[in-house]
Image (tube, rainbow, N blue to C red; front, top):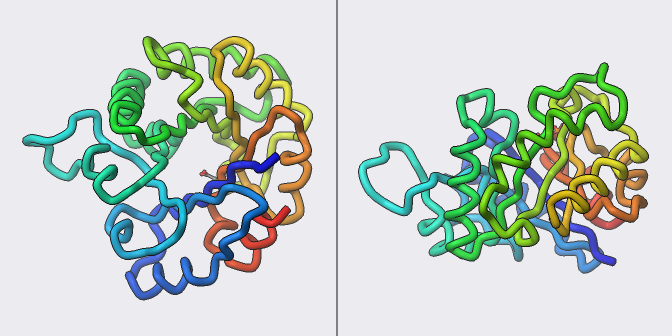
Length: 227
Ligand code: PGA
């Protein structure tokens, strides 16, 4: 079964030249479905089979300075959009905003990737973490067709830290999310690299990965997407 592997470039790189170069170095593998999420400013210039955006707004158009809407993304043939990433939640996005963004992404036939795991701590053992992500999922998915939403479980302490959740724990969380909400695809994110990726991909209910730092290093990302 193909897995879904998403590269989140965050606020990188700084020039279009570098973005085009980076894209050209990422293999177009058939082993997995691979999505690149460059910053919005590069979305119309980089060429890759599947592109995603790192965020979107909850209105299609109007007086909303600085925002980018799912309708605009659709016109650039963007297929996926990250919503509720912990770095967006730090910047002020709440669960109601996340819900509204997902709703509009779905209305525009863009697959929303709902990121949960904000406010988790490494001290929470196993299923205790569900108390925190339950809230994010209850509100984030409220009134929506959950089966059309991809969920990325990203414990916030694992992002960019070199620490990861364990594959076993992630499998349990993925199963919990699927059983409780009817979500069909759950990804893991947080310090994924070529050495630890296989452990997550081997889990039956982990349908792929959301990769930050390692997606900026072509030799690392190419290894991960070909697993
Ligand atoms: P990381 O980021 O792989 O650099 O930890 C993951 C993410 O923020 O989606």
